Image (cartoon, rainbow over all chains, first blue to last red; front, side, top):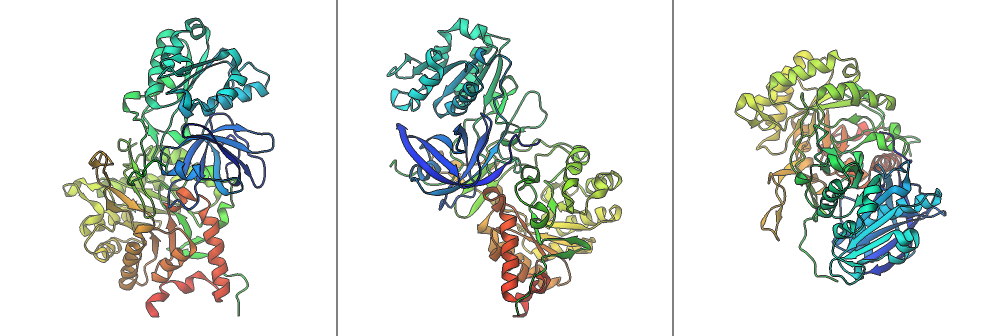
Length: 285
Length: 313
């Protein structure tokens, strides 16, 4: 399949790497040459310097600025993101991309439910930004995080989605008390009148959301962006796959996805991702 | 006297390559990168992902483990769309690159290897390939499930079965997980192999100390990456020593020009790069340039001059 935009290994300079919540940062990088372009839902592979890693690390793109810089939104969870955490402005790193498919612009963008969990909000926010640029209403955003300290992009989300931004926290410290499924159940009319739902977050959250939405609106088109460890990110190694009901062979998440028809995913065989990197867990820093 | 423009071209088993660099099977997707760098000058040819007669779903996940600093384990299980699809779709898509294509095939019996080779040769797209590489990592059902590559008679019969029906060059990819790789390499040559690819992955295991169990569901996996380079060099050294006229494609842990030169000096005619292109998919461009610069500074007109030179030091 022909890439949506030319794939390059972009040498990038860090513009900023700022904390925006508990263990959360927004990283802005600018390619040293040329303007990075990508569609919402696409991802990039970060080559972390001095890591000893043999695999790059995949991240969804959060936003692309007019000056060709682009942002990633990440949570510090393993050795890779700990190294990212320390990146300072002016430092350089290579970023391969953009890779994978995207969340499309549908016929009625305003009838879109964007449902995010944790850092899975990144490609959905990007989709909303693109709709805004196109002059479209960016739909309704349902966002679930564990607690108020993990909302991260609250101001940006409120600004983009306005009164169509719905927030839930597991501990009730901000927004509605509960998970994103509870939140969706408070808006049955909105779900019923929606034409499509774009979902990104932890695997088990996506599975639960998809099941719920299917019950609430059986005609809803549902697309999910899957999270997977990716050795190559380029469709070569077949290391990141997902079983689907409409395909005889497992699909490569990096090359055939990461965005798939939610109803085609065999959720019972798709395991939540864990660290792919063998190491003694380090002390939290 | 510095040589003005050292030649990176080489002819191996009668096939002309513009560069001594190939990708290792299953490690590189040329389609994503055709706009990214000049494939035709960096890569000498393209090795396909291993294909089997029928589509194969591969192993359950997780399929890979990263081992920082030393490489990775993979337990993909040869997921592939099958030979018919590869002949109809994959091979024609490689034609625009105008590079020699080496089709990697695997089977569970010598008879099946032969059937696949025949199907390749009689298909319009299959006919365009430059060579076959036999991936001998599957169990041989004719020999009670012993892995093809670990028994000399299995290797000999698989290669011979293919050579009986396939007129183009055949490379046998050797596993290092044997007592004596020279004996296996010799058996491949007796079967009529035109060259040897060495080495396939080592066997490895990783344990998740938090869960106190193996990381990969099938426990054993293929170990590749920089950690296996000395093992690969040892294999190539001994194969070249015993079969100095045999073309050897060296593979195992190569990530820079220095590594590639070591393989050439140990006796390889060409090299394949696998694990390193996961992190650096453009690594071929850099290595080819570095090889050319090095040859120029050393006054070497052609890489062929280097082949096996360490044996005569």
